[in-house]
Length: 155
Picture 1: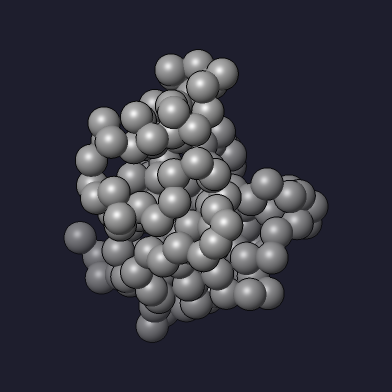
Picture 2: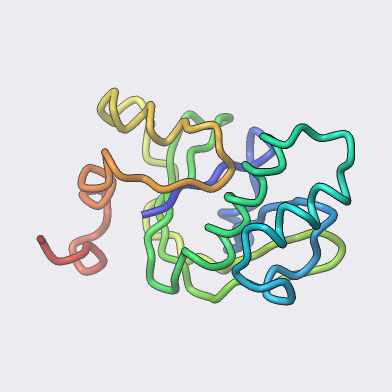
């Protein structure tokens, strides 16, 4: 399970059915390949004033988004403006849109569930600082929000 944050307090993710990371200076991730060092070099060259740690974090986030997430994976999106979370299923492979949009289509299954009704652990986890992150500790709780037909089989 993945989590994604938007730059704005109310994102267009729900209305467009597309989750987007906007990171300039790297272009289409598939043109580079699944190569962390190549990502770092390209991002570092494009952002020469950025600290090495920031470039490393950007590279990791983009690698997860472009290569680790799969069609069918569940994604949770906390929305600051509404104090809610939405949960969907990734419906497409990664694709790139000019000028700097890294995209995936998502079918939203749960829209704007009140964040306050989640456990403290889940609220903290979906508030992670990274733009695109793995949800591990509260995945079962988030899966429990899904309609019965869309929830994964117990493991």
